[in-house]
Amino acid sequence: MLSAENFLIVGPSWVGDMVMAQSLFITLKQHYPACTIDVLAPGWSLPLLQRMPEVRRGIAMPVGHGRFGLAERWRLGRALRGQYGRALVLPNSWKSALLPFFAEIDRRTGFFGEWRYGLLNDVRRLDRQHLPQTVQRFVTLGLEKPQAGPPACPQPKLVVSAEQKQAAATKYAVDIGNPVVALCPGAEYGPAKRWPVEHFAQLGRCLAARGWQVWLFGSEKDAAIAGKINALSGQSFSNFAGKTSLADAVDLMSLADVVVSNDSGLMHVAAALDKKLVALYGSSDPGFTPPLHPAAQIVRLGLECSPCFRRECPLGHTHCLTEISPDQVLQAMDA
Image (tube, rainbow, N blue to C red; front, side, top):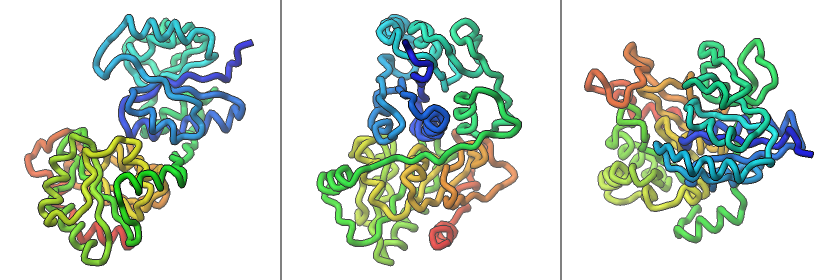
């Protein structure tokens, strides 16, 4: 007999959101210790899911981001028939609810959005004031009944084995004899979330003068920004931006002592790796997507014009970030 505690999770498409989704996976394991959790997700995220012990397996979504791919969704859905008693759909799009419907999963849970009645048969109404944080919304979908207040959200904890750490250190020929600071200067959302390259470079130079190793992290899209920072430092930093897979980036970051990051996916990775973290906020709001670590230091100015949630500063100056000085970040690190 099929167990109702076999879960298929339709996961999000962003690194940070996928890390925050681990709070839901932990919650499900707390409520249903014998349950199995499989996650339907973009292919890039599978190594991230492999570092979440609650997840049995990640299933690669056969359709790229932004594509409809009805036939591919139908074929995979039919292949998954009879394997799950419940589906939790984290994205709010109509197409994200198609595959659990095609798989004929008995109970299909998600928030009301894009007229998904019929595709979902356990439809929840999202009260954005009651659940201001993304992670709270994810966790709520795994609860049987709404609560009077926001749900408890367990801290995500990515697990990197000693063997994985050693393999990353060997592959990239790093020496961790001196303390390591990881700088994450990217933010895919847009420049209004990026601390200036000059500030990152100055911070790195100050730390290097104290004997720290400075490592730069980011995707291929962040390679140009990281290259500018390294050029300003006289090419004295170790620049891994655009040169690693996500899996290798996670394993390398697990070797760092401190992480300084914009509000980005790597910020959430650092929090889930239990790193000492300084998180820089400009146009975004730490009340909506905070780093899920109780000791994380958040640096923001709280200007009247922020958070604006814009990709680029509508006033043209981005003072919410440019006015954060490297000395302020050093003070947060020391704290």
